[in-house]
Length: 254
Image 1 (cartoon, one colour):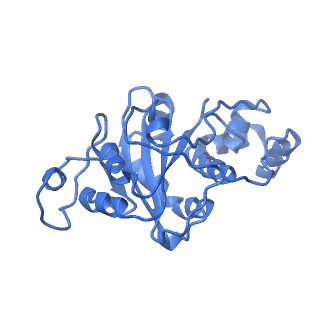
Image 2 (cartoon, rainbow, N blue to C red):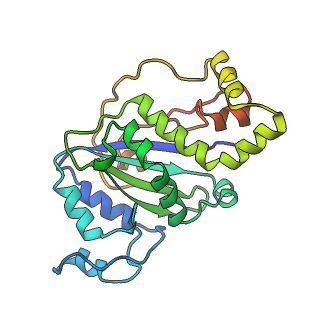
């Protein structure tokens, strides 16, 4: 089982972050949702789209997002904006119930505090928008994350892996619990086995240099669209990968 695939990137201030938000919200394959009424009147294509029901797929912690307001906020943001892609195999998404934007929204909402901490952003300043793309073989969600305080936010390799591991363990939680019961293993026993095999990361995190990004490409080329930071692109050293693969650890470069 490949588990959860995560790719991450970085958009510098003033470098088309708003265009990328529009791209993920409207590109082909996005699940369209009931968009809220625009926060203000105005002309132009974005305002026209915002007034049409089910015209885009952007959502936030609170539900459907205001696309116009989001584009304006990100475009005017003076700090970094991080981009993420989380992807599952179709059979995993279908079996585990991650084939809708609402299921992904609930997942991100439930873990936004941990995600904020991994990115060294105060939870009260943590902001995110996302869109679900129902791609045939690899349904996935695109997310954009930033801090209301532009001086906050610092993402390391350790933070990237922590985010992926947290979400993967939640997605595969029921299967992990079943595995515990069948093998009569405790959580601590699994962690101890992982440590014995050197699969639990404990090296000091080093800062990852953030590359530039541009809003273009499809699901398999979004690493270029969202920048070049990449987390684990395979099972990684989380419990899901360990339990379902035993002590065999494999990861592909993102």
